[in-house]
Length: 112
Length: 109
Image: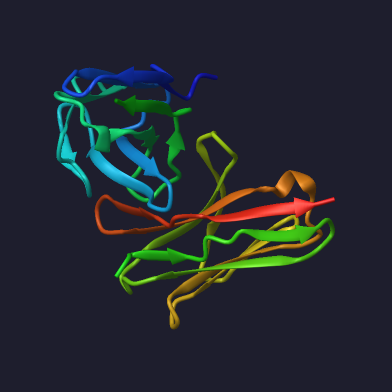
């Protein structure tokens, strides 16, 4: 069972470059989330989606954009990467707003 | 003030010991409570939900104290495989799922 799959798993970017992280889930979940995890900061919500075609800002949205064109996919874009965006990014999905969140394996991004 | 606060540890305990973690939350309207486990360089995974009446799953017991606004996780008879970071997760509102910074546990042989 695939669950939540993130690609890529690792990436090194130069400052100013752009990239897109892909999250795919095969559980027919309505809710999808993008988090970043930094040492001592815990998981912080970047953007989330409550269904196909909808997105909303989380706690730390600046510098990121998202799209949910298909229910199973949630894309996170960095238009102009900055060293402060060096982090581990996790995608998650859930069937309800209060239910268990299932996470992808994470993407380790380094911006130099 | 952070929405969710946890002691980061580390907690180093011998095999067989009992260890407890607490997590405090600031929003009294919080609706759902969870403990997640995260292994080194891995994704978080649900360990257990926390119910108002408290709940137990084998060696793990979770409790909620709404009056004092904290949840707890008790691990009995610690195993080496319990070594991980334990994340407290609080949910309130439409889409507000707040994660604590995690408490690191190392079980020593």
